[in-house]
Image 1: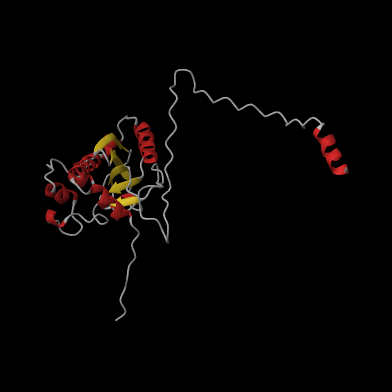
Image 2: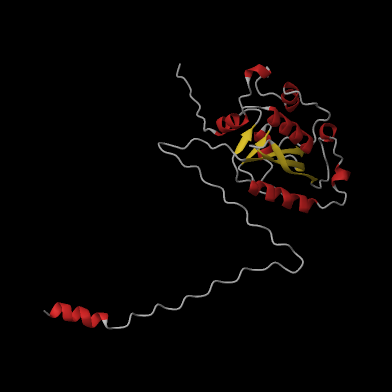
Length: 239
């Protein structure tokens, strides 16, 4: 019949050639004398069935603290940032940074002990800020004691906005009852409850180190962090 002959005729024609592919662009090389940085690892999104996935335990925490000239960004500024990048599984400090931000006046000098004149001394604080931003990118979550106070300073002035979930070690973590801590304990009380020596208070990196040592001594740390990241709802009773 005619159909087979038509198929044979079509098969004798040479196949259409595909358009040539554009060769991939060469990777951009860094300037001479500058080492290329490895790409940052991608953060895996949590997946789960049902309504919502359970919060995943963060692999790396950025423990941070601030010192400021006032209680509100409307009245003062942040003058010191301290941060420690902490690996949860290994209970290990990976990196730490602390830097001052220049200010004209420090109304809280009696509390944090940072003279405004010292904050204005020549120092590479912009490099410290760049290091801090890189540490944020490596972290899965941010941890601070009284996080509501610390987070209000970011996204203002020189400090960048932070796009990681926050954990408050004062309010979000349910510390074991055997530690005999009162509700909303101070950093000092938390450190002493875990046998961490307290030698100085109200400097940003010092408070971060206290928190690191507390986390290192807590046996149920992954479970506490996962529970702290769980969404919560407020239930009010009608009377």
